Image (cartoon, rainbow, N blue to C red; front, side, top):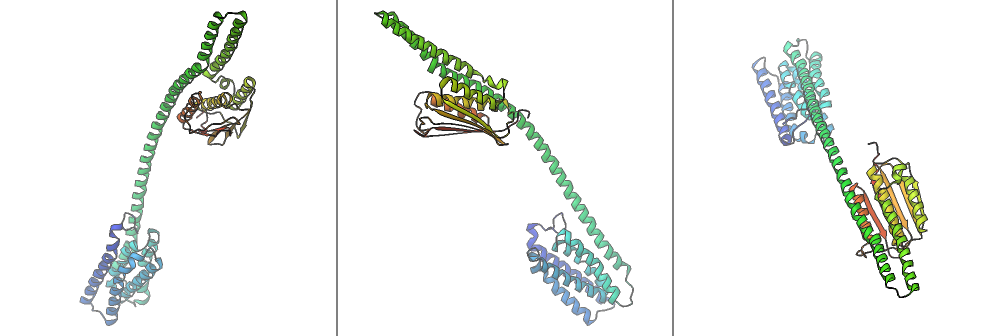
Length: 408
């Protein structure tokens, strides 16, 4: 019924505690009354106090379940119980045993901290009452022993219960720390495994992207060159042959440009010589120089070196977004914004191009492939990718990644 800590009652014993302790008190009171009556006898005043004390013990039944909500009621009840016990002890030392009933009642009636004061009052007040109002009769030794042993037993119980509780708490914390260390080691292993998988998936994505790039640019350019050369061989006049050869020259020049751009996209070389903000500025300047599109790149916040996987992801997304804006959106202005916020790093690419409907099926011009590649890249490093666009309103790409430092 009682918990391991004094003052605690198990929820299942909440209904039985009041009647049980009231019954124990009445039994002890009846025993003391019979004992005293068989000895020197009892006068009328003592019997009246016995009857009042018995009735007061019965009141513990309704008081006990209300002790937490109305603590003043518990204090008043215990004061009345202690007054009755003190009066009986003054009238007859036999009732000192009844006064000891207040010890267990104090344990369950008050919280552990306040029960110490209740126990102290139980040990002192009846003894003082007997010394003051008990006449000249000496206090029996067993009365003094009970008054001292009761509090000592309580203190020993309380200290032992607290030590047991602290020991169990420390053991639980040690076990939890051990589980946490094990989980951290497992998470570290999983993180390393995920990074390895991310690298492998990144290689696979790069191969797919380059395959599409080669198909869309170099393969088509070479096909056009072959077609124009065949047409030049079949030309009936020098003027016609010259026109086809001019087309061959133009296609070859365009294919060479595309080949160079594809080679640069194989690995972000700017990141090997500079930090991500500077690399994005160089990328913006290069796109401006090759396409004539006004590209502005800016950085806000305190830049910190990030894990290589994160910086490569941000650079590749910016690269792909700029290619899409330049090649498909026919934008005249593009803004690249890199923001460090402490826990996150944000990348925004906005253009004033033609825009499109993100919900519409891919039109087969390579845009859908690039967007899918960007989403996959961001997803593999636990980031979020957001795309906003509408026909005639430009396109906005937003990426959020955890700002994990490179030295972690």
